[in-house]
Image (tube, rainbow, N blue to C red; front, side, top):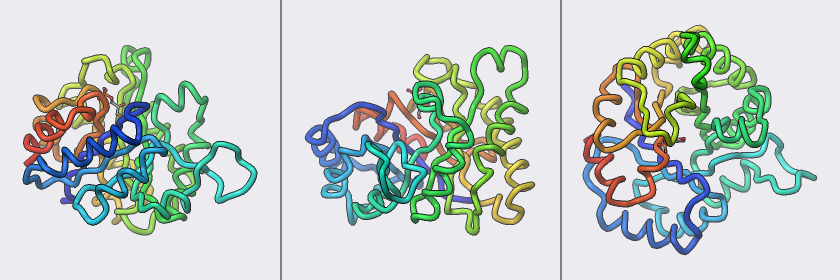
Length: 249
Ligand code: 13P
């Protein structure tokens, strides 16, 4: 079974000085845990994280990545740039970017491919909104989104990508999918991955995200096909991150 990944999505929070202080505090309080920790920070914070965390067991990365290798794309950050400062991961297709930046699954697929080609592991996010969930169509919706988002992803090794199931109605709302709901979706995602990537599918990590807290992470990650969590709000305080890591230990 792959090692659990505790992925911390800071979203648009923390200046570089705050990030540096946070990383120092974390380094001094880090509990023993079986899980791999990774911080997904605003791009401008990454050099600060590099300074504090390179050489430690804590990984880090970006919240987005360009679909292009280089060139006239004002404001974009490439896989090579992220790799150069030591980033390991990049979130792609977070529902907030799909919504506010109108990112389609086709764009997400290009970004995921650009990440893999540039040596960055994409954390590819999928998940349904409340309207879809209320109609009971969450599984076909999420799997369609997954297949479209993976349409350009030539996975050669399972550790080259991570999939995160984040039901949009559970993000930042305090409403969590039940562990059973998360587990059922993770099972469906695993089956879909098997159809796409055969023997590699078993080792791809599938995360759950949406109002994950120290009090609910253990039950969610106990589901057979859930291999960790993508955490927003509860990732901002070191104390809460220590709680999350201990709950997974
Ligand atoms: P919350 O943990 O704040 O619900 O956010 C989840 C999320 O969007 C992580 O990417």
